[in-house]
Amino acid sequence: MYTCKTVAAEMRSLPFGINEIVFSTVFSERLRLRAGRLHKAMVKLADSKWWILGAITRPLAAPFRTPELVAEIVRKFPQFEQIFLGSIIDAAPVGLCNIFIGKQGKAGSTHRAFIDYALKVCSASTIRADVNPELPEPSSTGSTFVEFAANRDYAEQPFLVRSRFLVSSPAPWNIDSEDVIAELEEVLLDTEFYDFNRRPTSADQLPPERVNFWKRVKWRFSAAAAAIHFLKSIPLALRLQIRNLLLLENHESVAHAECHALGLIPFCVENSRLHVERRVSLWRNILPAGCGVSLPSLIDDDDPWHRHPLGCGTLRSITIAESFSVWITEALALPAAGMPPNAFSLVFDGHPTFEQSSKAFEMVKLDAAFQSAMEQQEKRRPGSLPEGLNRMFFARFETFPEVIRDMIEGRSNISCNFPMGDLLDADELLAENYPRSDEEWRDAWFEAFQTVKRFQTAPPLPPWRDLRLEDVLPEVMSSTNSLLFLANV
Image (tube, rainbow, N blue to C red; front, side, top):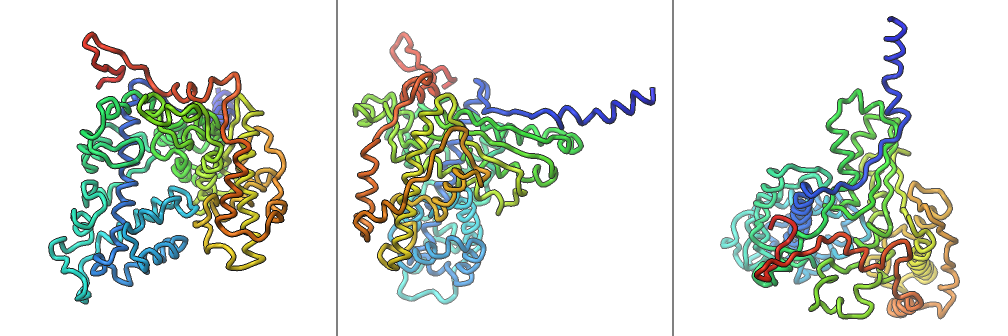
C-alpha cells in the first residue's frame, strides 16, 4: 500500500509534464455572437480613445495641457515622444488622429497602452490658472479635459465620448461574460453603429443588411484566450506541472488577437518551465485579417471591390508584409512586458500550401530589402530622406530588416514552418540610380510589386474569395422576401 501511494504521488505530475496541451480557436453557435459583440466593443473602445486623444494637441486644449502633464506622458512612453510633442507644436487640425496611422512601427498593444495612459493622465487635468488670453474661454466645455473633449464643438467624433469608458479597458484576451460585454457596450453608447470599415456611422445611414451583417460572421475567440481561460480555472499546483502549450491560431479571432500572448505572461513567470508556442495560420488568419477587404465587400454587389475582376477574388501582394508585421511587433513587445526568456515562440504556419506560403513570404523579404536599402542611403548621405521611418511609405518598424534576417538564419523565436529562402540583396537595390529621393524610392517599390500584384491560393485550399467566405454564415429568405439570418437577429 505504501509503495502504491509513493508511485501515485510521483506519477501525479507526469500527464501535464510529458504531454503537450493543445488549444485552437474557439467557435460555437452559442459563443459566436458574444465574441462578435466583444470584438466590436473592443475595436470601438480603442478607436474612440484614439480620437479623443487628438483633442489634447489642439490650441483650444492649452488650458489643460500643462508641461508637467506632457512630461509625465512622455516619461512613461518615450518611444512616442517625437510624434506626440511634434503634433502639439504643429497644432494639426485633426490632432493625433492622422499622425498615428501606422502606430509608428510599434506594436498595436503598445500604441493602445500609450493612449490609455495619456487619457488617464489627461482625465485628471483641470483648467490651468494661466489661461492664454488669446484662446477662447473654455467655460462652456467644462472644467476637466474629459468634458472638454466631449464637447461637440471641438471633438472629432463627440458621440463616441463618455468619461466613464476612459477607465474601462478590459483585457482583450478575456472571454468575458454577457454582463461584462453588455456593460462595455453601454459605456460605449452602443446605440451608434460602428461600420466594418472602421468609420463611426449611424445605423440609419446604412442598409439593414450591412447593419446586421456582423451577426452572420463566424466570430471566434483566440486559442490564446482559450488557454488563459483554462489556466485561470485550475489550481496553482496543477498549473506548475504544465510544460508545453501549443496554441493553434487556425482562424481569425476577435479583440486584437495578435496581442493575446500578453495575457500568458503571468503564467510563464510563475512557472519557469512552461513554454508556449503560438502557431498562426497564414491563409486562414494572418493574410485574411490584413488584406484590407472587409467581409461585407465579398457579398455586396454595390461594392466596387466586388465588381472589380481582381478586387475580392485575390490577395494584394502589397498587404502581405504588413500582415506579418502586426504579429511580429507583438511578439517583439513581449520581453519588455515581462515575458521570460525562451518561454515563448511564434510560428507562421503555411499549412497546407507550403510552396505558395514561401512565395507570399517573398513579398515580406522584398519590403525588408527596400527598407534596408533606404536606411543604408540615409547613413551614406544623411538628410537625403525625410526624417524618421514613420514617413517612409513601406517601412514596417525600425528593426524590420534585421528581424527578417534573424528569422531566416534561425536566430529568432519567430519562425516559419515553410522554406523562407535567402535574403534579397539590399545593396543591389541601392546601387540602382543611387541616391534616390523619397518619391523615387516609393515609385521603385510600387514597380517592384507589379511583378506579382496579386496572389491566389493553391489547392487543396479553395480560391481566395471562397476561403474568406467560409467565415460567413448563409442567409435565408423568408416567405415575405425579408432577410432572416441564421443568428438570432
